[in-house]
Length: 121
Picture 1 (cartoon, rainbow, N blue to C red):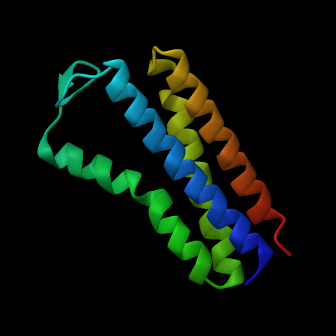
Picture 2: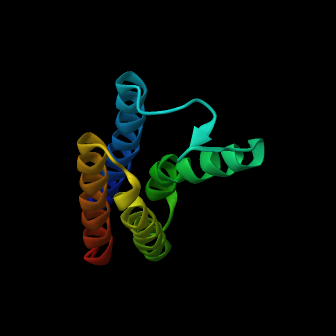
């Protein structure tokens, strides 16, 4: 297996755990209202969309291990860029320091993913 594949896979695992850590801390800190996001009730279809979106890093773990070199490179770059932009746009809406810290950490992970995939030889 190519060492870059292993590094990219590890970065996707790190990103997934960073997202989960933020959710767990948010629950224990009491910074959430069940069934709501930003004070608005969320429908079952919206929750389904959120679940599907949050599966992206998990899917990328598998795809990074099985895709051929060229498609692997571009799928990693595109997915890391999408998640980077999504989190960058949402960053100001998080009020707590731990959320901002973890989001910035996730952005850094995305940058490393893009860098490794771009420089893949």
